[in-house]
Length: 269
Image 1 (cartoon, one colour):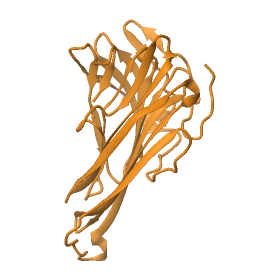
Image 2: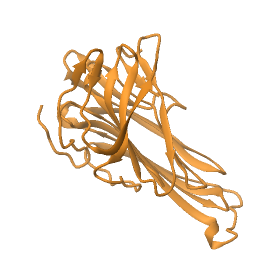
Image 3: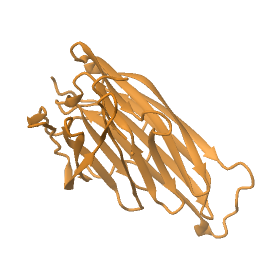
Image 4: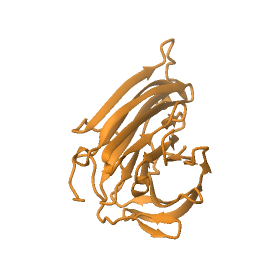
């Protein structure tokens, strides 16, 4: 069992990176009572929600969060702005990122990243479209990451799905998941994996990754987990009607986990 962990079930010197960026303003977490608060300067039209978790036998707080969005709804973001270990609660700001919609197309591999992709299809007697409008394709995207007190995204997990439906039934699809880590501060990739799943009505992927750092917290190893165990991996999928769905199952554990805040972006089809 990982010590002092908190799980979410549904996630120095300011340096630049080609794939993991710092926020425009950074500050160390502040404390008021039993709450630890994190800065969150990147959202507009934000609302605040409280997510109540349950405590595991080992003392970790377990949270669950998921959502969906249809065509044209753009990017919706969740930024963790508060954590209360005593009451097992997290506070998120939910809104639109100032930077605008994230891309629903996979990005090219970059330094300190690792990507896996695949395709799926219905093998037997694919249906013929009854009209030109009967063939449609949808793509969606989610990114989950953890931010340190300097505003640097120290690890991230990105997922993309694309699916084609004929006569409202799945025909073919592709997926990709990418792990990213901030090596200048000592972060490394420990493991990643995933698999697709589909039926007539929809196409999805379940994927996971773990990154760690032995020097972030003196005397301890700090872990960021994206997905815990199947089927509680990070989920991203699309349905025949253009609805995209997501679920993050992310956690941070080990030493100094209160210094890392969780962030989430979802871009609908």
